[in-house]
Image 1 (tube, rainbow, N blue to C red):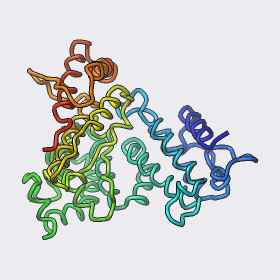
Image 2: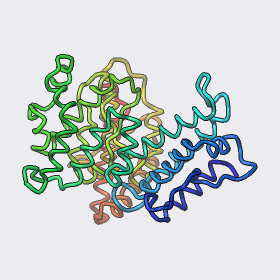
Image 3: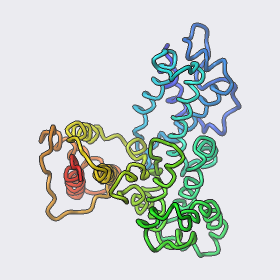
Image 4: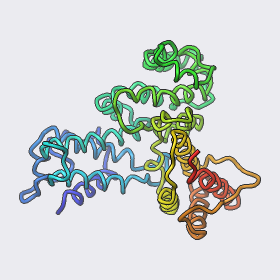
Length: 374
C-alpha cells in the first residue's frame, strides 16, 4: 500500500474521529508502521520529528475538512493529494533539492503543508494552529493571531466595550510593532503612501471594519522583504464572517508589489467548484504575454474577482456582460454559471432566481478582469 493511500486513509478516518487534541498520545505517524513499507514510510516511522509532523498534518487536515462557510466539504482533497505525492517524490533524487536527504526533503514538505493547513484552521482551532504558524512563519504569526481574534467577534463590534478589553489589548499588542514600523519608518513611506489615511496609529485598526484590511493590504509587500517568494494567505473563514477583509487581497500598488499582496486561501478552504476551476485554467492558459509591472495589478484584480465568485460577494451589475475570452467556449461559461447557481443556493441560502443572478454577476466580474495586461 502506497504512502499516498495510507495517509489519505488516515486522514479520512480522522475526519470522523474524536478531535486530535483529545486522543491518547501517539509516538508514530498517523498511518500504521508495518514491515515492507517503502523508503518514505520507513523514514517517517523511524523519525520522531517526522512522525510528529505527520500527526500534526492529520490533526490540521481534520479541522480543515469542513469548508470556510461552516458547512459542506472544503476543497482540500486534491491539495492534500499533491502534498502527499510531493512527500513520496522525496524518495527520488529528482524530487529533492541539491544534497537534501530524504528526511530533509520530507521535513520541508511537511512544513509547507502544515503551514498552509494551519492558516486554514487558525480561526477555528487557534490553540492548534498558532504554534505552527509561529514556528514556520514567525513574520506572519502576529497578523494571523490578530485576524483570528478580530474575526471571532461580529464585524459591527464596538471594540471600546469593557467586555472586550482583554481581547482588544491582545490584538493591539501583537500588531503594535509591525503597524508602528509601517506608520513611522522612513523605508516604509512608499507603503504608507497607498494606505488609507484613516489609520494614523495602531488603535485605529479597530475603529472601522475596513481599517484592518487597509493595513493588511500593504503589509503583505512590506513583509516580503523577509525573502519569502510566495504571498501569504488570509484565512477565508475570517473573510466569510468579515467581508471587509477581502480588501486585504485587492490591488494596492499598480506595480510589482501587488504580487506580494496577501492572497486568500478560499480556493482550497471553500467547497469545490470544478467548473469554475476549469474555466480559470483555460483563462490563464489563454492569457497573453504581458509586459510592464502594471500587469501585476491586472492579475490581482482577476484573482479578487475569482474569490468574490467563490464567496458570493460579487456586486450586482445592472448590465452584466459575459465577454468572449481566448480559449474559452460558451459551454465552459455556462457550466460555471450553472455550478455557481447551485452553489449559492446551497451555501448562501438564496432562491434560484437570486442565485442565477449572483452567478451572472460573479462570472461577469471574472471574465471582464481576465486576460488583461493593465
